[in-house]
Amino acid sequence: MMFATLDKIKDPKTGEWRERDKAETEELAFRHKSLMQSGHLEATPYVIDPNKILWTVQDGSKGYEVKKFLMEQPEVEEFEWDQKKTTKASWNKEKPSEL
Image 1 (cartoon, rainbow, N blue to C red):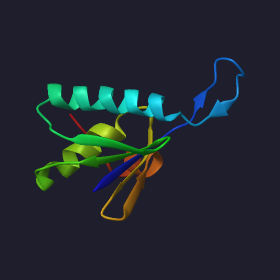
Image 2 (cartoon, rainbow, N blue to C red):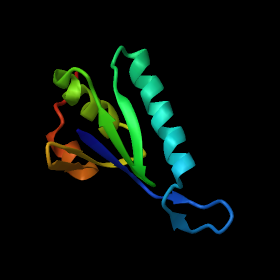
Image 3 (tube, rainbow, N blue to C red):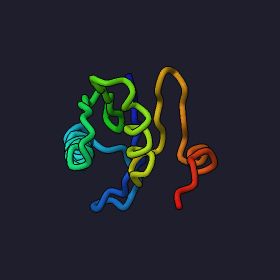
């Protein structure tokens, strides 16, 4: 199982930073799923908490592709896979450079 933790957003009414609510998290999960599908990557999201999405794949070998895609999304702060957490900062250091 893979988990993506999302960043906080600025509330347009109050101007304060807050976590997304469930509907906002579901909307973002659907958008990410659609983008993955357009790249022929099948993953299923389940919103388990505001700001946290559980991702599953039928083919475990696709896990790294899911991780790479999600860590490149500006809304994703942290990715956890097999109890190993990767933050945005550590991802920027470890990701392979692309030509």
